[in-house]
Length: 524
Image 1 (cartoon, rainbow, N blue to C red):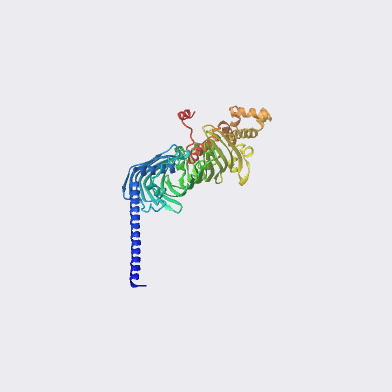
Image 2 (tube, rainbow, N blue to C red; image 1 turned 45 degrees about the horizontal axis):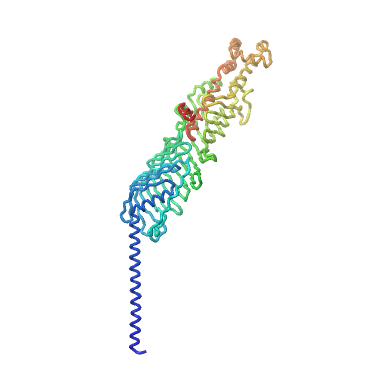
């Protein structure tokens, strides 16, 4: 090949290489300009009213409530917003957030999600009604512009802080209120973790009406919220610990909550009339979840240690009748029972009361509205029973643990308690008197059932007082007093049901007291 041809071919190769380089540079410039234009268009779109309205529509679809987003102020990819609000007729009643700030990651053109970081909300107020279902919203689908098609359709928040949060949650028991707390939320695995610190909690319970939140940790996973723990202080010395789970995936909200209460005193959970009469340390554990019918089911147990019941006139009376001074101040080493509440039904089961060397009580008691019903096994020390005429042989019979036992059935209403022990004690006292007076009564009335009934009637009417004057024995006097005063037996039963109703009844799910007359009329 000649030197001229070689130089021609070399020149041609250089020309082709130079042209290719020019084309590559031109393409890079075009791409750079396109990306710059796209990025500028995206930024312009972020700053537009259309973007704000689109975001509000997207949020409405997600939470099922009509939403409004305030004006957004942008400094490149830093946004400040006046506030956000949403309302619905369903479970999510109202949301109000003010003073929102956040940063948007710059990779939105190449990512499948907007990445929002450093989100700060000055104040947030949420109202939920768990007795209702969450509503849904089908937003109107609008044609997308070219730039909208290039941008992500979902957002991911890496971290959020609410400096002050208030909440109101409606339940079948009443409203739960939370105020003055702070919330921190972080992205974690497939969901989010949240920590709530400080604030006050108002509870719809007759006894535990207020608590101070110390710390709460929860996780939000898809449509579930898992409460890992919540620590609250109640009363002066009590502590409430909670854990549980809420599932929002079904048509109706499903939840289960577990709790433990420690450090309380009896005076903390009973009404004012009993504060100076009952003392002891209280512990309780419970769970709450919805029933098939939609009511709230509360199950739990209560334990009172080292209790003492005193300053009751009826105890002084019992001490006088039985000649046992320990009844003046009734000390019980242990009281425990299981508790169940659903709607108007409040049930105490597996009741166990132990007064060392004196008495034991076992049984159950139901409150349904104002009606009560229950059965108890009552055990007394045989020495105690021997002071009550007829009781040892006809009412209390030898049984387990060396005690004398009888069955007591409770009924009636909270204001008019009925029991079957009084009649049996009165009858037994009369029978015993009839037998002890002996000869003179036998001669006067004979020994038939009809004659005995006639004797009892006249004994109660005071026509045989002369016969008692000449006797030498306190048992006869006690028997006559027992016949004359049914309050000896009915007062302890009434006092006991009142204590359980207004104490434990309020502790597990609201007051059990009767509604005022004006509220009754409104219900009717």
